[in-house]
Image 1: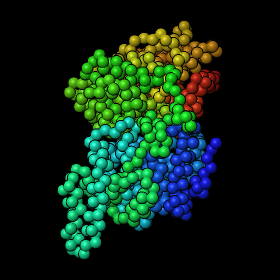
Image 2 (image 1 turned 180 degrees about the vertical axis):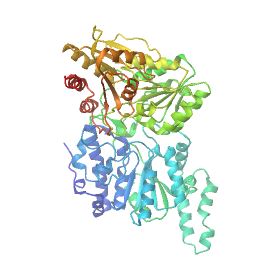
Image 3 (image 1 turned 120 degrees about the horizontal axis):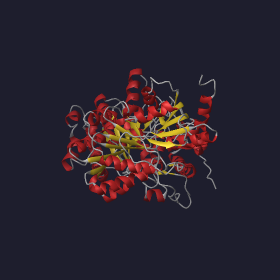
Image 4 (image 1 turned 135 degrees about the vertical axis):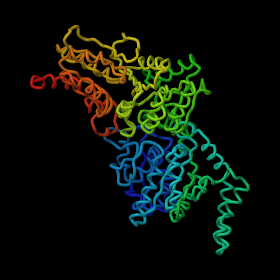
Length: 632
């Protein structure tokens, strides 16, 4: 039976939290946690990260005044409590559903979604922008950013901390330190934060020293300003908040991120402080749901599940592209000891978990640091290793310059494996890998591939392991492949496409040139058209760069209409390259792909249908194009 939300239903705005007593706010927090569990168990979504920010969010929103105050969230998958405290309870059951609430923050969704983001490491920079704009416009609202212990390890976060400390403006950064992001955090900064967590008594000593110093009369106070630093540095120079304080931030913490009453006092005081302030809050991912607390990684991003039994859906079904790559990469590495694997905090999402377990000395998780990861891979390649750099398509956007400057110019044979290319589904526009062909195609010295199915991805992975002339990229979608393609297949050859013949006619009505996930859709559409007497042939491009020019030109010369199909934006994509190749020929060309707009979240089949990137849509497009008046 669904719970009744006595307090949440009274909250139309975070300002309504101010009418509750501190004791009642404890009940608000309990209802927020209950609402997350009840709804995410039905819709799926990010569970454990949001259970960990319940008290933190309630305390901040009860201490700040929103509006006009502004709180900027990093990534957004820790901000479900924010949605529930901003009057979205009645729509929370549409979370991540097509045309429902986004799983992240969106400026279009609510006026208090001040800054949207699906990639990590943006909040501090954006909040600093809001704070500087406030100063320029001479308004008085308070500004805070909430980041995570993985996001703060990204280079952009440190650039922002450095700039904010230099500017000295009034703003607060809250570090939600739950010891783990999607995967266990890595690196020296993680170890540093662990030291801070382990010595809260020193922070208490520093705060007491500060209190004494502040009560001293001038100029003694100024002379003793370094006293609190001296005490803690003398006792434990590496265990205090030095790194933040030396950058110009007032460090407060570590504090218990679930002790609501203490948090209320802290944030009410912090709101009144001047200058850059850094609050270090320790939280537990999955807090309040025992299964998620015990295995936060497993319960980070979930499909709908049985709430009472704490049971996730059983894994099964056909092999996914991610799994196919992971198995092929491990197989290749077992045969070639120069192969190493790199991921940017996504070992599960990129299929490298088993690789990491079996070959730990040849596996590198660089954290949320795609730029570093790419140049690190370039260095490995320059030194003679074979780096397999596995990064989501949408996240490689962050390292465009490194791909161009550090890899391609130097012709270093880094192997890039771009998971989640095309339409990813429920995570929406920040996660759709819709741009990789457009931003990679213009770069010289890159070889770009796209498999028609998981079997072909495994073959391409093996081929790339042996190809050492230039950097190479293979992009592939989320999920499993379509099983409606013929099993007979030609071997992978550099720059060669694969012909999928449906007609024995020398002259064709329609020739399809399809890329990756769209080969199956084009093939099924062609089969239906053949039954109508429309002669078709499908060319599986395989190599997006270099294009198999002889095969494409031959197909163009033999058909009345050429149709390209890709799950990438049309602007600057594969179809554009084909059109440029055939610009001096007379065959009409239709380019099918993702239009010039950001695509919202929703199931992959629904989104493909909306964009006519499914067999029926392709078939209908051909019918319209072959109408007598269209080809006149």
